Length: 421
Image (cartoon, rainbow, N blue to C red):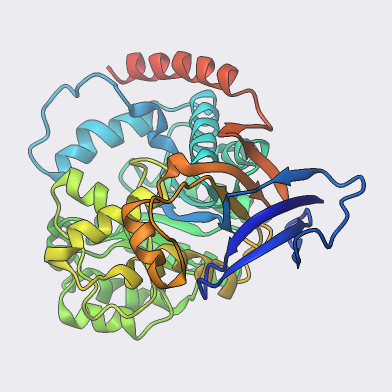
């Protein structure tokens, strides 16, 4: 238990403001009980003074890539990529082939710390390491657990490195799902053959899970599908059964035609928008038209800051999407609805963020969106509670040695870069 005293609670769904003391219970199903300030006597319960601060539900990331964590500042690729497929070939597929379990562990630890410090207490991750495949998901899970961040993991199964590695991806997934909540990951339609696709869908059904896959991130995905399967990407995935699962996550969805958008909207599947990654890769702009309301935000491995991701979607969306203040906030929070409606553990009401936001103007439910988009930043995160445990206080992670992890990650990054080149 931990008692948050004298804070102002902002209900993440109604935006109602309440002065309250909050008693937070530990555990994946722990509660948060509200008291009038001064009503609850702490006794031996640890107390966190939140005077002058705002408390609300913490954030969650709908699509991340732990494997990219050690890429920051790495040397340029041997060839300057001229298109999206070359970005994959010369950068990301070169990187993921070079990973080993030590590098993956460092990547997961620094990602989890970055998430925690930006108020993110739950991450949906999509991992790839074809030559360090066995045990990779367990390695990531343990690292996230050490930091105290909840997770929903999958391995990015693909035929691009050969059928033997694709089979290993299926085996790793089955092994992980036998012990943990998770998803069945697939890279994208253009690197997945019929056999692998069908086996993945069958596995998702047997495990009552869903598929997590990149969809039409670049126009080349659609072109490949038409040339090789004589239908568009969503049509292929729909026929294979991918869209039948309410746990399915379709990442990107940039180059869908109206028929495909109708298939997505008419299914229980979810879409995850990754605006900054799309801008960085010059693959196009997200447009929500015809996709329905099950849209959430991710970062696609660019960073771990969901407030930053939401702002990018809002500003870029002015010209390419129908997105206003309220819709931006709704998409930020939609990941909670995805997790809750599918009964995934780890994102309960005892996941909270305390914001030390010294608003220069009045802040209320009536003008919250203006402060959300133009004021509140991850730098205002003071304390973070994940499943009832205090994991960040005063802007510093508590459950692991941050400096030691960063020193090790520098070593692993140098090993990775050398191996890549």
